[in-house]
Image (cartoon, rainbow, N blue to C red; front, side, top):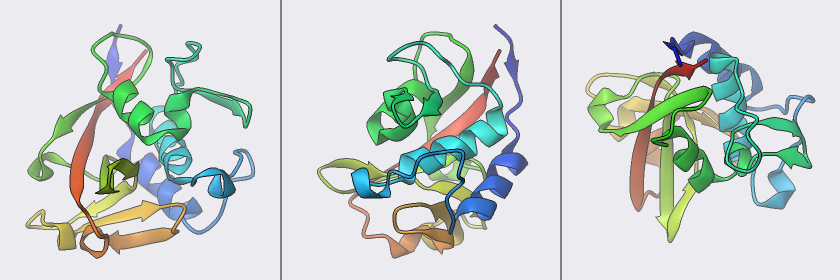
Amino acid sequence: MTLRPYNRQAAVAYAHRWAYHRNPDFYSFDELGGDCTNFASQCLYAGAGVMDCTPTFGWYYNSQYSRAPAWTGVQYFYNYLTRSRERPGPVGRDVTVDQIQPGDFVQLSFGAGFAHNPVIVAVNSPPLPENILVAAHTDDADYRPLSTYPIRDIRFIHILGVNS
């Protein structure tokens, strides 16, 4: 497989466009546990342009009832992006805060387990939580400082590119 570039600008532009609205092409999961990872997946798809339609373990969305767990579940999203098996679709890895870029993702724990999945839209210097700005659904936000969340644990996912 060939790893091609991820279009970070397209992912961030999508995040800004839909941060306070819902794209009618995708079901809103606000009433079913939250829409944050659905929104993160939409942003990722805007920058990747490729889905992995492998049943169960892929990353895809056809409808509310036909989607991979990785499209809407925080942990599944993480597992998919950081997988070791080479398959089509976006590829990511765990990084430290000084390695993140706009278009990457941050996952937050407020207690037990990671439960929120914002999109990074800006990283100002130095890369401290108050200088990292995110967009998210569920509690809709755009340009929200990461430092305003009650974070217990945090992990960053840097998108390396897209396998095709």
